[in-house]
Image (cartoon, rainbow, N blue to C red):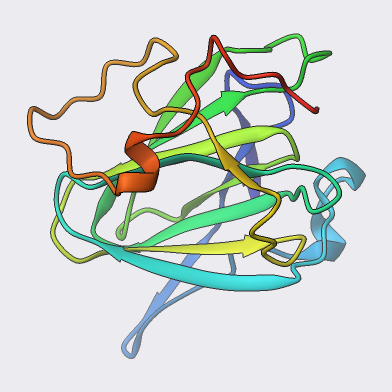
Length: 177
């Protein structure tokens, strides 16, 4: 497994070997024992979502005490994954990065606590798998308005939930991280 730096401090792309044979393929996306200490986490929940083309989900995170690290993998379709650093003491505070993930690559993304996450689904029926280090808590579930931090989402017809359309603007956000 190879770690690739992103433009966000502490966030990494994990490039895992894909093993193919006559049956198909096998890919291990995370191994606790092989990770450097700053990437070791124990998933407390695993979930996935299915999105239509042009769906934007984000920019989501949980605040303390239910803040969490995430490991994200696109298992079907394709996404443009967007990460935003909301940690006040970070060298990349309020910077973002964009990573393309799809069902044919062997990549996943590790996000430490304090990173807002979202994505644009590029294909119909795209499935994104999440492993997170804390359980969902509705009182700690927060977000930043998808179009308020400078990223120009490459779609003319975004599909968003009511919640995502009404999240806090980045200029009004007071980070607890």
